[in-house]
Image (tube, rainbow, N blue to C red; front, side):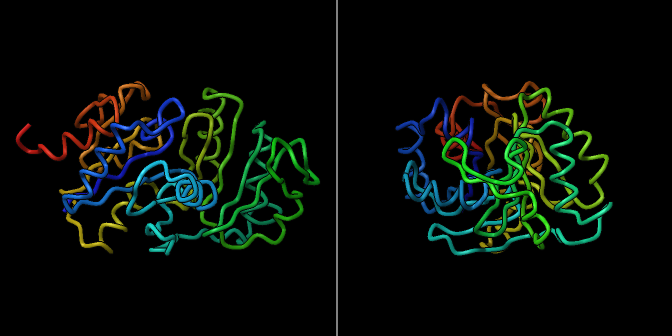
Length: 264
């Protein structure tokens, strides 16, 4: 039994769609007794629930929160690695100081995600409100945040996100793991990333490490591309050819390689 764990944005979905070739390849892969799923920086709300609602592709599992949580095709949780957001930090708590620092670094919006829910915050809406069909909470809500699974930050561009990521690593790296994903920064517990989540799921499903294949296009995909058979997208960040075992155009190409391996 093989697992293919694919990043979503920029990897599985390209130019706004999951191609027919990729959907057919996934179905063929699953029909042979293998498992396909997405591993994403998105949380349960913007990940699993969206994938389930729009049925863009068939999946056996979804690893969300940049590896910190996973569920099956029906949304049943396999695991969720929480961060103690209420622990003392600076003048208040970790959750409050993290989001406050993100806005000080000129982040546009931020969020705190729990196992199956989330809170959104916007620097221009400190008292909460609606903007572009998204509801934002007052910053005072952070006073009550306890355990959370992931925080994320949306920056004005990728260069800015790179700089903010480095600052967050220096200031919060003892307990958190900030990883850049384009203009977004995903922040999970220290030691938790996409590779960690895939390994945790594989243990629960009884799948051998050597039978795990991954596909990704961005910086937060690097840990899983290094840890397992890694396939980088040709449209991805420049460092991928130095890291990935194969470079591909699409997830359909990845599955083709897996089904032919090791005879390619």
